[in-house]
Length: 482
Image 1 (cartoon, rainbow, N blue to C red):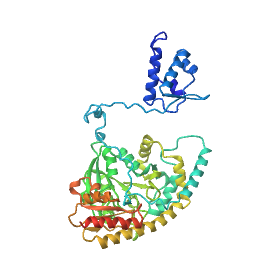
Image 2 (image 1 turned 30 degrees about the vertical axis):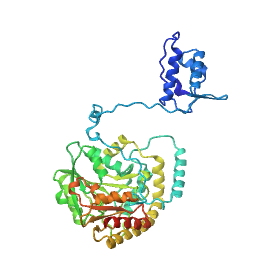
Image 3 (image 1 turned 135 degrees about the horizontal axis):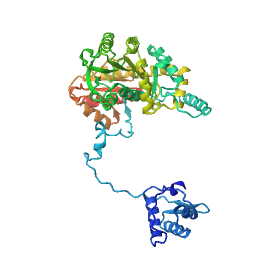
Image 4 (image 1 turned 180 degrees about the vertical axis):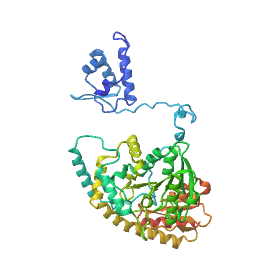
């Protein structure tokens, strides 16, 4: 009954002949506009009259009119309820894009398009960055989650430290030390809502708008570029070759350098040891920082893994960004930054300003999942599954597509890229494949400038099984042979 009493109703004086008409019209408008929702129970006529300062007879008469028009329903002994009627559609005038209202927005966001609604996935989807959830131990996760909730129920309500729950930071420190030889303590870690929030927070603390030069890989990861562009950075794309980022092409005034050295996104190459050394030397000499995005290197299929840049860093220049979106699942929204000591307080303050903390239950569940060894076991299992898919994809591309696609060697991650070796319209093929139920990604979408983009495709194999890979590639081969 509360919403009715709070409804703003303006009535003429009590002795006015228009009192009943005004009351009825405003209640009717509130129902049509959706302010009074279907199924809402109205107060008794006595309570309504007292609330709005009218006689009970007037309240009864207003209710009776709404009942006769079908806007209210009565239930035996239970009072009057708002009926399910179609809300009135409000007319909206067409506003030009350059209207004064849009000029109130920050210039970066004017004309921005919101994220597309959830799409109906193609039958055979080589989607990037998505793991296979059919093998995830959800029953175990539910048990750990229930345990975390029981523990939380015994604690007083409170906001947690923005840096992240101590148990989770301890678990992450142990995990990255074992899996990637990243030397860190729990105090060095800041827990984030996925890698994307990590990029956003780092952009906030490292970028001075319109001044800070940020070097990004070309091709690279568009959401990372967007985070730094939104913060006002001056982005400079730097080309990638078979050994990773071309360090000699870095602008001398670069103060932030964003790289994916262990498994370059999207080409899949690993940065060579000499390039890693040169990059760290550049950062130290120029007072720059390096953001190392190590998004899926836990899945490695051969050869000795190269050391993380953070492991080699001796000048506190590297921010190491990790995520659980690939090793666990994207909906978890958990990532982390291993930050140099000099930047930790600023990063924690930015996290608090952004959203204060990640959810307690999720953090505690993840901490137990990691600490009890379940994450390591899950990664070992999935590594074998993904390796079989990668081998099938690579073998099929080399056997059936050597006339127009050249796979790029890659020993890690959940995707594989291939360059087009003859003149084909890649964008048209991607669209034709989509119409036939096959989801593919073009390399062009990952370049900051389409003019310099090399033609090619990127195949994700995390969320598509071997049967789907075979069927999808058969469709692609038919399209490429036209």
